[in-house]
Length: 307
Image (cartoon, rainbow, N blue to C red; front, top):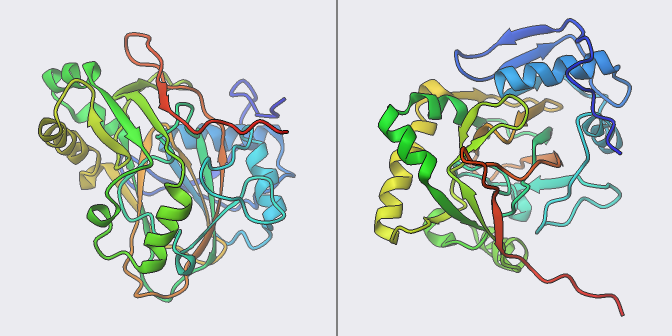
């Protein structure tokens, strides 16, 4: 049973520094971990739902165990469906650029190739390059709100096929041999495909948000050419500068984002320097469209039966 602090808990007072007009806030003067009170957790969740992504500086007290312990206060942990968790942990995914799995340099929402993709992600900076390596987030709620009435109506009728199998060379033209090998042998070794509505209802706030990002293969009922044009038009609304925030990492920083209302992009501009992050994700709900339909898996690996 999850030990999530509900929003009915009276939130604690936090020192919040807003970072931009539509997304992002830094929470200051708090050391996060499994020791937090329900009131503190409720305040962090409330801030997260308001600002979509929140940041904490100088969390040098966090170990892998404490990062997981803190994440459990936000909900049930869920491992990545295609990646192996870090040894000795329940659900920490180590994102190591040198190993070929740390460069998420395309706009995306995490793991949308499954139906109940993660609700929140908790990311900790372990090794940071001397320059470069920032991460950007974009509000998919603000992007929906920016659409004209006619485009909102169109978007609400669209469904898209998301998959972990895509043209790696086209998406990552500067990818290294290690990154390509990791993609082929680990990330895409088993096929996942899922149909999501392009507009989902946020399960906690009731807001409408766009479900897009580079895991989309095509829109249902549309050919590839039209799908590409539709995707680019809608995706451009997500990544408008006004809808984004950029974080310059320092070692021991932590970011938490609402994966149901954002996309993110890790800048690959650090010239091969070491960059290692550790991420834990919290289980989410199956998205629901504006007309009440739920996302559906189309293809997923068959579980092996123990002999």
